[in-house]
Amino acid sequence: MKKNLMIILLVCTSPVFAHTATDDMVDAARLWISSLSAEEQKAALFDWDSDLRTGWDYLPSSMVKPHGRRFGLSIEHMKPHQAILAYNLLNTAMSQRGYLTASTVMALEQVLHELEGNSERRNPRRYFISIFGRPSKTTDWSWRFEGHHLSINITLVKGHLHSITPSFFASNPAEVIKGPFKGLRALAEEEDLARRLIKSLNDDQMKKALFRDKAPRDILSAQERRVNKGVYNPPVGVPLSEMNDAQRNLVEQLVETYTGKYRSDLIEAVTGKKQLPNPEATWFAWAGGLEKGEGHYYRLQTPHWLLEYANTQNKAHHVHAVWRDFDGDFGADLMGKHFQGEHK
Image (cartoon, rainbow, N blue to C red; front, side):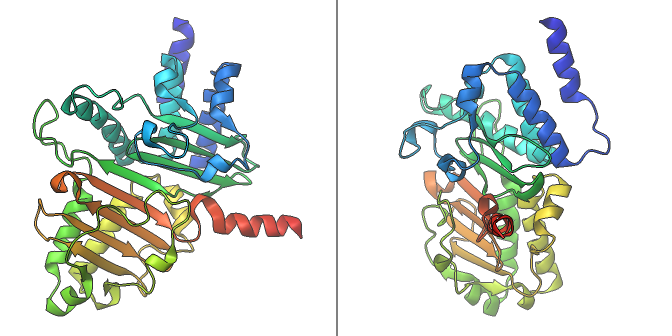
């Protein structure tokens, strides 16, 4: 067993040369699956056309509707070597910073566990992997790594990446105020850059950007399988075309805090034909207070993309941040074209 574990550790930590992210995903997924028993595979593996494939959620597992639980195999129920391989699969999609952020979000569950009197529903090992279809460099398949405040959804068609959304990260507390993690802010840039941007606006820009005095309680897209575009269109906010160079630079930095959590080849694949930000059609909108500690909400949107953020709960001490594709979450738009082509 020790020898096998050493081999696994070497696989997980060896440098990767000339491999694409999608190649790495297939290899990591297959390796993880091979470590599972038949019963564990039954819990983790689903058909490609399963209704569960688009049923994502960022609530604690016991609050997930309608079943009151998540599907997939949890880290909590994996053997140590299986957990190593599970994290290895997550790492194939993430940049270094993104993997650190995801790990920090999971670690905050222990902080909540202690803050809430050792609450049973807070568990940093209660994160699940689900695989839909069979990992291959030529077929359709997808995978999800998900638990409270974290949802990573990767979709591949014919072995090629088609979607990395919905992409959800959250932080509760927004800033740890005591204990060994004191001062930790898992999503600091998502808040600070946006506040710098809103405060940089002149009076005319501010009139366009502020669309509500009070921030909504949460992101408006919630855990919907598909974004309701009617909520966001026609767009509100100040357009990128009316910003100065410094403001546009802040927009680009803000976008990068969301997209930069993923490997660069993944970002290039999904934004190559759908620009983010779009220089001709990007809007920034804000609701709520402008000062730290005041409930606030913002969004950046283009005709294709939505970056949405809310920090109102727990007295503005609880952040939700999501990246969505209006038409292409879970690869919906490109998958439709793919299936139409196959039918013809």
